Image (cartoon, rainbow, N blue to C red):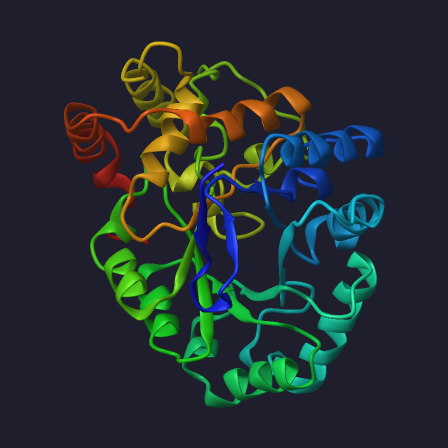
Length: 327
């Protein structure tokens, strides 16, 4: 699989990675043996980046990754984790003592001496403007608890503030065919600064797979049931903030743009990897079949200009009025 350098980490990673929120919690139950099989299928398909967080299943996702990589030390996987969401979201909680404790917990979960990458996990907006916060992250690097740090953001404004910080190696941001705003300023700024971009929620919580109808029902413990209006966390994390009925209809139009031999989901992933400035896209997977299919998106030929134009037209007509100015 094609590799790109992840910003200021200097490390090459696969253009399609694996998001592991699904393996921790909030997407319905995934058995341990199934989760380990997903990790293995991704690696065998050429994936060299796993994205996780200390809050996914309260550490379960990190622990599963650690268990898997202990048995596959030759896998060469770069692990990007996140911290900060296990406490009440107040800026004063983002300080060195907490960072040390959170990093040490993730190190234990993953079974490593030094974390490849730690990302602030969508913290309160004022955190991005705090010199003390980034001084503390620099201290973790100096102490060799972490090799590099980045941020995971909700808004383009937060991303731009973070990109201006000289120590920020990467920015993780929602980017997909239903969330185009980062293309305007964030991706060009990141590319100019040498900051890596991890594109998250690439299928708009599954909408862009084209598999859902208005009648689709998700499990009670699935965030696509309990967070549609931002009841538990930012609404943009669920269906990219798009109204479900609108998203289903738009996704059917998007699926019609898929080239012969490709699924709608693979087309959505290929669209992201074509955007200038993107390092890697991190779709999640709950099954071996999904992991393999996601990785195969890297093998698709570039989408033609006519398809790219059609994606933009669909966004402007159906999605932009709902979400563009909010994120």
